[in-house]
Image (tube, rainbow, N blue to C red; front, side, top):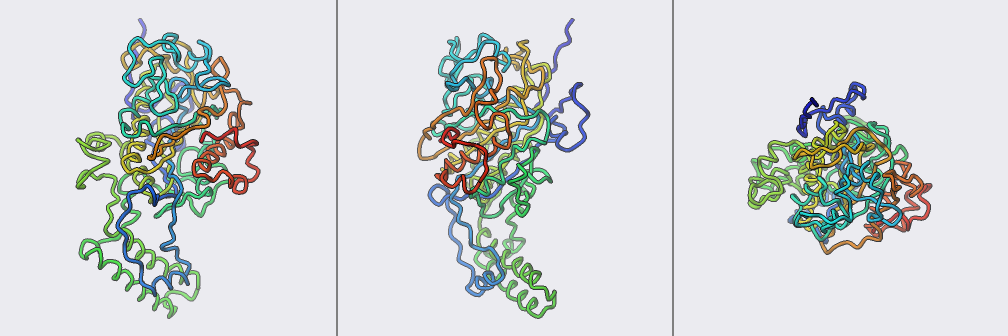
Length: 516
């Protein structure tokens, strides 16, 4: 008698007999022994789109003069770039075929063979182009769904999660899928584009980079070595307290009116400067300036944030947006019961509100070739809910947003079906397979639906494998990152600056690689 397969909880670790025992933190994240966390990078409040805060009074003239003479960066935020959130699905998740549709040279609907779709986890009675007997409300009736512009399989777990969490974003989103091989189950894939996005102009009002791990990239996957700038090395963010701690104005706001906090902090800065000038701390000019900047920066933070609530857990607010059983993106039970939702809320709050301009949300446990389909479906559904939450928050705040979803490697099916309710009659995931990998971009525009040039960059062969010559990104993760940065700059209208900012980028003809 066959042993009954037990469905794994989305937070349950994955044990693989054909994998070595996890040793590093990245190994534990890939197999779900620890949860992923969120990384945020600098760049963008939108003067035209964002919900503006009430302007605070400028710092006093003598404090501004002192800041300028000491090189303290206060009141210098300009923003203007579209914020970005990246999802790093650690372990090698399925993206192509069963979630985002991929095709041959003709695009997403240039059909693969039946065997090719089977390799991507789709059985013969669920192929794109076939008539559905019981289509969902948003399906096109042929196992495709264009609710978010970019075509998803109508039974995609990503899609189901996004539809659940992002109803207001539907109609104002489009995107592109990028078939691209990457090695399986390794942190050595330089997937992370954050430093490149910073070079392209992303600049946050509070921080430049924050991340989930103590690594140079802030996440599981590495950043390309030639893009790393350790002066903006990520600071950890994975929960609401990390967000509120970044603009902590101390207990002064509890005992003073918000209008009185800034003068108090300025007075402290003046007293400190007099002591520094007397060399009571040190005679070193650099140290003196650092001390001055510390107090001036505190005054600047108080000026801008003493009367602003940046807590993602807004259930006690007058008009809660993120956490509320009736109107929130997450219910209180979801938010309190799932760290991935709290992490997502923290990152999207920082990014969409402009306190940071781009972020990576690393989610663990996506090495789900467990011999069933249900485990992967549950984890993809949760990822879809997190992706949808980011789109929905951007829609509610009327702020443009770019999303980038990637994973280290991928996996494939041998055609065996999981006919359980959770398996949905689709192919079980039986092993790692880097040849089926892909990434995708989504772009939300509050002013109207974006018009893509193309929805697929590169393509698959009929047998369900990435054609490595189909684009520069298809067989080189560094060039995949450059392609993502290129599209970020194109969305921002900065395409003409790409070659100068990223010389020797290796992409060739740029017009063939832009989606927008």
